[in-house]
Amino acid sequence: MAKTRHHKEHHRTSRVGWLRAAVLGANDGIVSTASLIVGVAAAGAEQQTILLIGIAGLVAGAMSMAAGEYVSVHSQADAEAADLSVEKEEISTDPAAELRELASIYVKRGIEPALAQRVAEQLSAYDALAAHARDELGITEEQAARPIQAAFSSAASFTVGAALPLLIVMLFQGSKLGYAVSGASLVFLALLGAMSARAGGANVLKAAVRVTFWGAFAMAITAGVGKLVGVAA
Image (tube, rainbow, N blue to C red; front, side, top):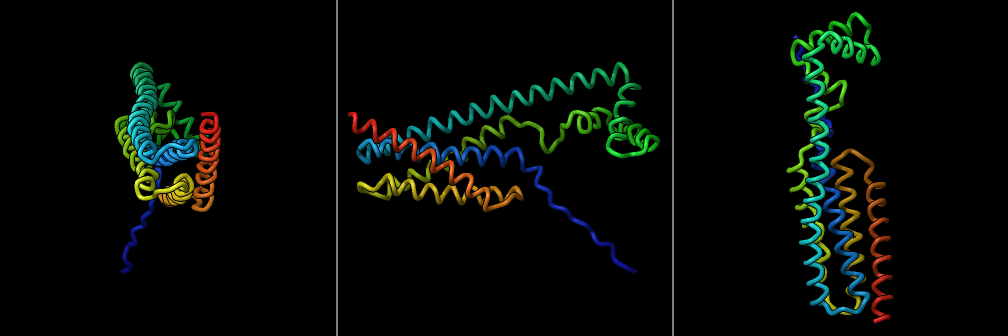
């Protein structure tokens, strides 16, 4: 008798919420802090001043990321809750119409009308609101908005990202500090892009090149501004 083989699939959609916040936070931490350090270094500031400014940027950036992510994701959560409340009311007041609506969704997806009707009836009998949330509104448990998780993830990842260029400032001394921070930060960005792409199942090389390019662009602009300010001073 043949053994039944268990078919296991590994999907990454459940990672979307925290992965997006973590990658955004770490990327912003590296780029903003490195750009700040490079700009101040280009203006001719002393190493102690650069380090102090970098630490202040880390703390301010982490708090800003947490607050911004919480507010934006909470707005999404509020919108989802409002949609679910409306849908719950409609199911309660006119279940027949909602059943027809659900069946029509399945028909548009390629299911025969008779079968679509039976599927809609069975899903509605089990959990009508969940069926409409998933198939009509596109709200799933895996991708539901989680404000607190997103806020902590963003703040923590920003802190980790920002700490990397600060570490270079503490370890490296001399007139080439800006170049050392820039080079190391680009390497960090490339690694971050590659790791996030790997975790999300995307193209590793494209992700690494993309984040590295924009990081280099940001640091170049900030260095130019810092140089101009330093000369003017």
